[in-house]
Image (cartoon, rainbow over all chains, first blue to last red; front, side, top):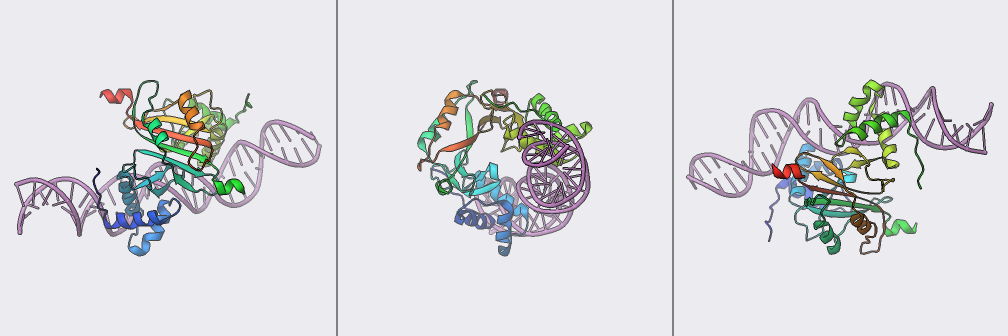
Length: 132
Length: 132
DNA sequence: TACATAGTGTTATATTATAACAATTAAAAA
DNA sequence: TTTTTAATTGTTATAATATAACACTATGTA
């Protein structure tokens, strides 16, 4: 069982926007989209994003500096993430493969170091773009 | 067999700096360090970095916006990278595990999409920092 | 040599992200 | 309920990261 997080007003506005978006959103595009709701400054956006990432409601796509809602019920905390990214249309999909997550969660390097967190980004062509 | 890349003057200056560094370097810290060698503008640094990444001599640590030399003889091209990152001291190590790279190179998602490239970043505590 | 390609130097600017501080709200403890 | 503590907000300013555009130069190859 995990703690329910009651989002604050700003967090909710920003989460809803990201959650409705089919593709990852960048911070300043979020800012632009929520200005009519009273969120005026970058910092207000970044603070909400930080919190949402921390509690696992969204993930950051590091190679794109963009944010996507978590659609993987098993990752309530942002500690184990994997995405596929199409290099043409930039479509991003969260990968939920039990095999992959088990493999990575148990991976140990040569020093026996165990990791508490990972982020994996695959790049390639999505189905649509392959056919073009 | 892979093509030898003859680095240009700027590329060489910047690669040498990164190669000598025990930890990843950020673009503007590189700029600061090579100004005495005549490289004066950010763009000169970024262009060299882009090329070096493209030919696989260095890798970008996406979560840190920093660059590290490739010390993995098997990845002559920047298409399959894995790193461990200590969240305290920020030490970054390139992981070269045949098992891991085979597993990821062969990974297919539910749609059967095959990837041409991936980047994996593990986070945790390095040995030193665990003992503290 | 002539051509094509890649790299250079430069100025300006775009994009992404955080510092610092005062005020406010929410949650938990007394 | 009151207190007090922590988290969040609003705001201005600024830092850090990265690219656009353009004229020029070097290099490799036919």
